[in-house]
Length: 279
Image (tube, rainbow, N blue to C red):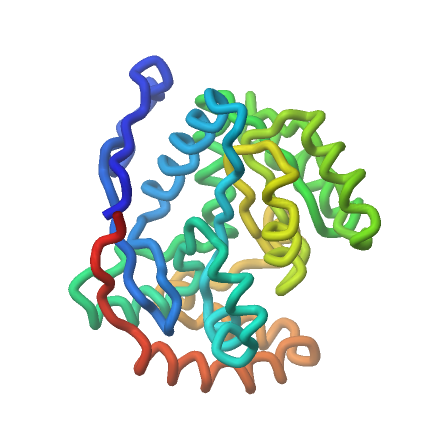
């Protein structure tokens, strides 16, 4: 069982009560061979708030790595030992894909709901605006990054996006980028560099960055801006959002889904089980 959460009273939002108490704990379940947090979107957001407040009071803390598990990541982890090692460096792995939620229902500790990053960035932004958390947006093109920052600020008045940087840089630039990020003193760094680059960046720079969370977010900024559209609600609930995306971008996504989907389904069916509660 993860350590219990307890948010100081002065940081509690005066708005409507959240779905889960701040002092709830959570377990993990193995889904497709990946240890995944049994957290709702609300629980994940509260975890972000607690960890960021804790990091502010501890100058020697390192940011927690928060990665997203979906069919693509599950298949890659089974095929590529290096990717699996990097992926498992995460402090929290949440269920980005609906299939992971479905599979977890075969266990004694099912995941309560999907926490798609494209939804979670809005949950996180709302809570951050209420409690004064500071965001840094890393990744995507300069245009998409700037527009995502604008949209989030307008949608969530009071949200502090203290810095941002596009995702077109090489490893030789990472020292300067980490220095730039640290100067802005963010609580949460959103890393949208595509798979597997964003995971590698987060693991490689965890000790250099000062923040509460490093969250990988893929192409999330393009969804925030509306450049990419979400599947209809019924397709999301049925776990068919991948099909919607395939229809939208067949040339780019056909081979990815043709290879990863069958393997991911096999892994979800054969490598899903309850975990003993983590200390």
